[in-house]
Amino acid sequence: MKKVYFLIILGICVCCSSCVDVVEQYTFKANGSCNVTYNFDMSHAVSVLMNLMSDSVTATPQFAIVKDTSMNYYSALPDSTQAKMTSSEAEIAKASNLSILMNLKKRQMKVSISHESKTAADLEFYLQRLSKLAADNHLNTSGKEDKGFKGVDVQQLIAGQDCYNYQITPHKFYRIIDKTKFNQFLKKTQATFAMARAMLIETPYKLVLKFAKPVKKLDNPKAVLSADRRQVTLQTNMDEIMRNPMVMNLKVDF
Image 1: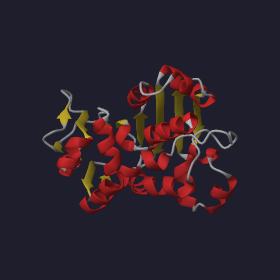
Image 2 (image 1 turned 120 degrees about the vertical axis):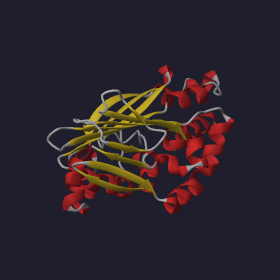
Image 3 (image 1 turned 90 degrees about the vertical axis):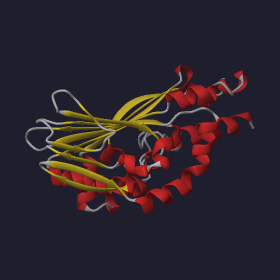
Image 4 (image 1 turned 30 degrees about the horizontal axis):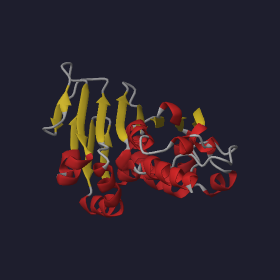
């Protein structure tokens, strides 16, 4: 029973974006390509939850699991899933990588999803398809050779990314939140957000955009433009986003 309790608590921690520190970073290059990375750090939530567990629970084999691995998204998918993908979905997966660091004894749990888009059009297509791609593929982040560990549900981590509409060209990055989709997201996750607040687990979010040339126009009063006008940083948290979803809207001309 103690083992079951541990797995339930850990599952809540690692599968719900409300318990995750999120850093979303874009690096735009002079040739028009862009590297985008989602970093999900669940270490704080793990640390809080570990304080609730007895020594007998932390002595279980599950608690001793250690993972530190990186893999290509496409290569990590089961052959049956690869066969069902469209050519465009396969290209997205092949241009994406995953890494996971899990060491519960050290109270570490981090997942990173990275992707390289060759053009602005490729980037917009990727961002509009990211959530659906994860939902359709049910990826095991531990790698398909490891049947004993189910890893972290990527779909749950990036579920909130489906709430945006994007307009991306070689000279602009526009992201506008879809209120209808966002409200649907909140309905599905409000219980977990409430639990996180009750356990004093904060839900910070940071967006960083790095450009190869100076930004000409920035439309978001909360976003901070660096002195050289080549980096935009937006920092907030889920409580603020729930009160005012419009804080996530961002229009950058560069």
